[in-house]
Amino acid sequence: MMKYGVNEQGYYGDFGGAYIPEMLYPNVEELRREYNKVLDDPAFKAEFEQLLRDYVGRPSPLYHAKRYSEKYGANIFFKREDLNHTGSHKINNAIGQILLAQRLGKKRIIAETGAGQHGVATATVCALKGIECVVYMGEIDMERQAPNVARMKMLGATVVPATSGSKTLKDATNEALRDWIANPVDTHYIIGSVVGPYPYPDMVAQFQSIISLEAKKQLLEQTGSELPQYVMACVGGGSNAMGMFYHFLDDENVQLVAVEAAGKGVESGHSAATTSLGKEGVLHGSRTILMQTDDGQVVEPYSISAGLDYPGIGPQHAHLYKVNRAKYVSITDDESLQAGLLCCQLEGIIPAIETAHALAQLEKMSFKKDDNVVICLSGRGDKDLNTYIKHFGF
Ligand SMILES: *Cc1c(COP(=O)(O)O)cnc(C)c1O
Image (cartoon, rainbow, N blue to C red):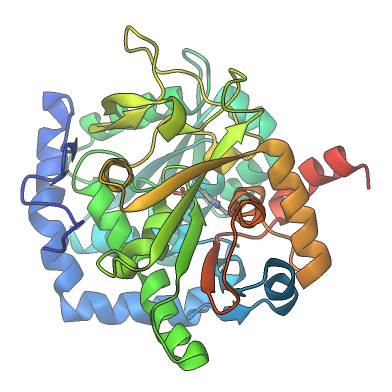
């Protein structure tokens, strides 16, 4: 086991585990028993690598951003997950899980989605494999994210509205869990980030770890050392950050910086800055840090970026925060939009607003001129065009 990795019981220090209703035990237990066997199987590895190469377009480039480097006085590199098929890192995990599901003999996939990005990634890999796909989505989110609903339908998925409660992500999650309990034998539940009961956080981190595996090789070629001084990424649930950090975790001289969404400001009451505002508790089946009231009710998060609008972080992040292995900071809506625009103007890249949070953190750091800094460019900004237009009035 790696120093910061999961232990036999599914924990990272105080965090992790599987806090689930008894009726889900068989499903989660099957995954726990099988996932490492499948992931270590050479035939699985070969198919995963082949699809990452020929379908996703990996390895994603490590791009030396020259104008950023001049501006911030260090060597800034972008790990280009935005160039992946479907436009972000989410496809890495979706491919890993569909291959796993096939090997477990599953005939049907379910998922829940908030903004629809994970739903689209899941519908994509189900189309690729010809497997039935059902995506649960809050009724209100379906209205707000109509283009992603259309994408999922074009890809052959059934999108089921969650009509209870606040009609958003939380309610979609409940519907998906109910479905999984009713269909334990033939159905696999694809979770889209490093959250949920063990083994999901470890499994998703392993699928996303391709990001740092490639980055190390690329850094060695481009800088002569596989170790940079800083590695940075935005954090919603934390999957692109976990993938970007993974192979650097044991290199303690590499400073890891995780950027959360401050929304309208950490103290504004409209924020998703989990480590600043949260406390320890249980969210979506694992013990972690989450935003909650004194009597343990989950606080509704807010961020302009749908992918960061989540009230917790994955348990491994909670651990890295608590033991101080990574630094957790936050960036407001306005700061992220400015940083997104700067990236367009300096590098000709329109980043996702999630990604722009990580870029904005550069403004707050000071570097030595020989420092090498890697930022995970988690996704492209096409999906966010309307938000950018509304803010800047183009
Ligand atoms: C979904 C998403 C995120 C946030 O999810 P993580 O699991 O924290 O990575 C970040 N960036 C982009 C582009 C996304 O689509």
